[in-house]
Length: 277
Image 1: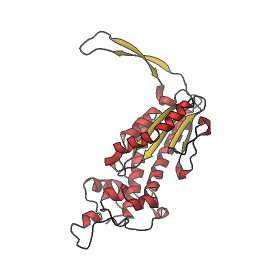
Image 2 (image 1 turned 45 degrees about the vertical axis):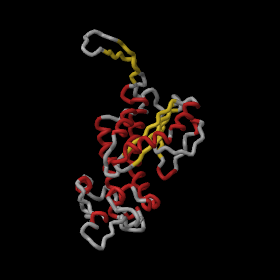
Image 3 (image 1 turned 90 degrees about the vertical axis):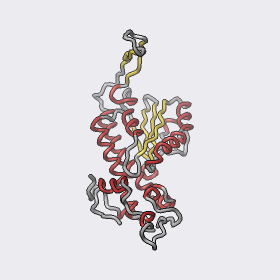
Image 4 (image 1 turned 135 degrees about the vertical axis):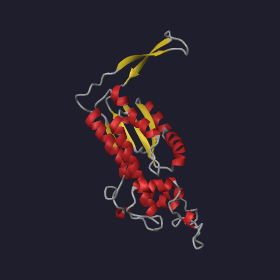
């Protein structure tokens, strides 16, 4: 059913082309196979259900394990970016006003001129060097006391500056690729009231949702969030590659262990041990 030596690319291709063996598929040729998920035993055991829709997997923490592994990859690279680049003492925090000319269609003359704030290479982090980044790994995140907002919500990754009174957070999900857009809207809506509370407390606030699909597809939302804090070029390519590979690696093991009633993630082979390209 599953080859431990199979590369992530091979596994991904089998998912894309529908050749990965699942209970639902096996029931087409095996009369002894009912086609149901081996964990919840009530829903059809499709690959989409196994990777992101099984209530037993959700309750046992299989999906949370994948979520946290991907979040750790993102957090480590964002932390490096902020500590080495954004908070670099030698970096300039100056911003410049630039003129953008708007020319009416079919005309060569200048129709209007508008001054637009240019935040520079570090995006919305440009104007400060005291940024702090924290992540909800192990469910240990506490919303920053400096914001003076009481909330039980714990965004996955928070970046904030006390000097600027600016805070932004990324709420991450690893949904099935079919639900990426829906997941984004739900997460943005979930934190809308917290954003208002922060703004009422005098902080500028950015509420962002990011998605890395269960099959390893990195949604545009992550690139937009990364660009907003100055992660571009090679740094972005590295973030995209490693976040996607981590999600796919974890999904590979969620699939492999989908017939095991007990879940023990400590027995899962680390990403670095097997082929990942």
